[in-house]
Image (cartoon, rainbow, N blue to C red; front, top):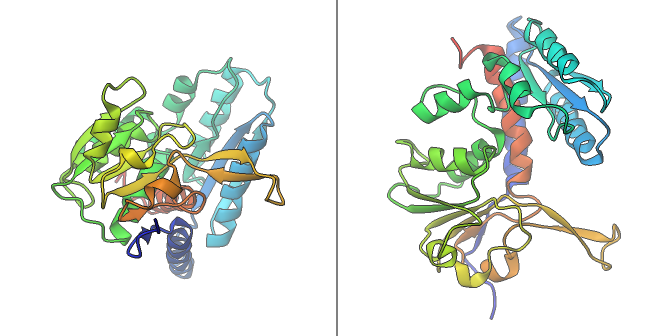
Amino acid sequence: MQQREELVRIDGKKTAAIIKDEIAAEVVLLKSSNKKTPHLAAILVGSDGASQTYVNAKVKACEQVGFGSTLVRLDETVSEEDLLKEVEKINDNPDIDGLIVQLPLPGHISVEKVTAKIKPEKDVDGFTPANVGRMTLGWPAYIAATPYGIVELLKRYEIETSGKHCVVIGRSHIVGSPMSILMARNAYPGNCTVTITHSRTKNLKEIAQSADILIVAIGREGFVTGDMVKEGAVVIDVGIHRIPDASKKSGFRLVGDVNFEEVSLKASAITPVPGGVGPMTIASLLYNTLLAAKGEVYK
């Protein structure tokens, strides 16, 4: 059985590059008009390899589009109180427009306390209660980067969403929950009938089979298989996992929460892993920082 010729590969890498170019062009205009250059600050606690990679990628992306950036490195043993003081310093610094605190944090630090401490006007990750609430109400808000990236992919690939059944697998505060709200809103992309599911959902396979748009963010390698997807569905794979592969020079390859080989035989459009949703996350973070510098959300 061969892959359907009409399958659309939703290219997040290409789309993210276009968005970065658009942002860079706007930064040039801001500078030529003697307006503020966007500036993003990141706080990194500890020396986790993946976290360092993510933060370095964000700093590099800032350079690519002409943003200023500040990276604050703190030891893994830093107290919660001292971390909160660092957040306050950035909150009070008028030169900095956006602030992210790279997760995960050490176990002795409350993620909720740190998130709540970030000034909503600088919360370009879109995680504070203020921004989540504003998004839910349909008010101007910084939308969490991964959900925003998915929405932007659907828009730029002109995928019809109105009246469609969207099934979200995964209910995290970072992806699943905000995704379900965005797809149900009275906007484009949106106007879907949304079902949010998770690991304890009964009849998950049958629910997934009814999806016109299936968004998978459950954090399990190859969780969605071909028999869970109906013909012609649009499939968005948020997962990313590193698995051993002796045929690769690196010794490993990246896969998602979706079994791409099986599902791509039935889907009308699908995001690959890597190169799908992942690159859009940083592009969305940059876009939020640009909005922050321009004061277009909290006026």
